[in-house]
Image (tube, rainbow, N blue to C red; front, top):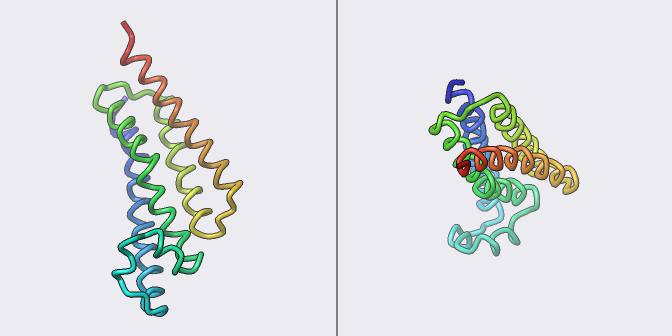
Length: 142
């Protein structure tokens, strides 16, 4: 199968990160200006989160989360593509991961219902785990 088929969901997650970055910028900067929070207070993001309203902090929390587990997704999916191991199951898992992360981001950045968010996290983790274990079996096969 073509490598680009597994790279498409990779770019969807990357585009999600771009969207969340813009969303964070357009919520955080005006709020900091309105609340007269000096940009230097952003030096320690934990302290900054305490100063920002929850609806603004939720967006930046999600932005941060997109640089955690998705980095493993990028590495695994690109490795699968480069090694020429793209197949239907890997593609389904990659798309499931991307769609679940979009839903996770939307929930976290809006209503932040933790049980729903956690469920989506676990489901995306399962999709990614299938990709990791399947590829590990191929890589370590003797």
